[in-house]
Amino acid sequence: MRPRPGWERLEILPLGSDPRILVVAPDDDLIGPLCQGLDALGWRTVTARSLGSAIQVLIDWPLETVILDARLPDAVEGIGALRQTVTPRRLPVLAIGPQAVSWEPGVADIVMSGPPHAAQAALRLENLVRSAIAEEEVSLREATFAARGQPLPIAEVDATPLRVLAAGKPDRHFLALSNALTARGCEVVAAPTPYTAFDYLHERPFDAAVLWGAEDHTPALSIASGMKRNTRLYHIPAVLYLRGSGEINLSELYNRGFADVAAADTPEDETAERITALARAHRRHVAIRKALESARGSGLTDPTTGLFTPELFASHLARVAEGARLRRRPLSVAVLRVSESEAVAEARKGGWLDRALPQIGAMVSRLIRTEDTAARLSPDVFALALPATQGPAGRIAADRIAAVIGCTAFDAGPDRSPFVVEFEVGVAEVSVGESPAAVLERASRDVRTSA
Image 1 (tube, rainbow, N blue to C red):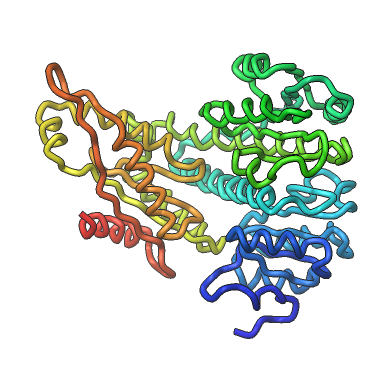
Image 2: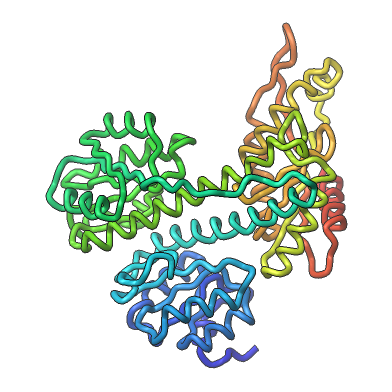
């Protein structure tokens, strides 16, 4: 296919590689180097030189997110037009340029005065895309439960002031940032040492943590590493505020799990806005997760595991499949069946497998992503609906869940060694025109073929 005008970067995409990001920019001066870095990380980009070309690209390609040069004329109105083009799919937008910093909150999901590091952009965009998919799942799940007479609670976002932990020794830049956060209505709690930081993190909920790098980054890195090892603190965005620029390998920092890194020469107002944007996104994510998890307490789910029953799963899978078609997103279904090993056969005889299955179901529910749906099709067969997931990625996700559960030992009774449970896994991606029942059957056949 010959690229349309305005699709300049499409010509350099490797054969068989689908672009994920639409870049809207009049030239490569501002965002070009970022595009090269994202392409190298596997986030393939396609560039449109005008908003009109960008709309045509979105019509022709199911792209996941947009990076927009704020210098474009009518950029604010253009973002609305781009989002309208892909409705009902949610389209996250990262706007770059000094003009974007003065926009009203909410026009773009992220605004930056200058291009970020490619690793940082990839991390932020991944989080935005997953949040968008989760929000789509909330609306679908609300419809499924409402149709069966048990509406889910609305995902209401906490309206109290955002809570930000500021960890590190006092410094004029750090204090100025704290003041800028306070001016934006944030409740800022200062923690001078890692010990006090963790005390606060365990005592009260926070929406973001900003860590002062100073001359020695070790305390900040220690706090960030500790947060990533804790399942309750894992999703709280951590921001590293550096004393200057170019002091440390940025790729290494983003790989360590920092959501953002800002140098002290970045204007405090811009850094504060980036932190509050992260905090708002985190709070929204918490509300979405609560709404999705509330399904487990309804009378429609399996009473012992909280997972969807076969009937509820079939109903919801039909709605998810239709949603995937409308949003032009992939959808995969996975089936996990308990493997009939010798240890499992013995545990089944004594009823110990039946005692372990509720715990296994609870583990499945904790190991899936926020937007995924897990069901118990029969006592020892589970199914997963994996939105926005292609078949190979769906198999990786299902195999990961099976591997984690396979590392857990379950009680086999007095004087008997604990037993482990392994799964046979089948995965199928929904094809064009394929019914939900057909794809579930295909995933089940894949279990039998793989066994």
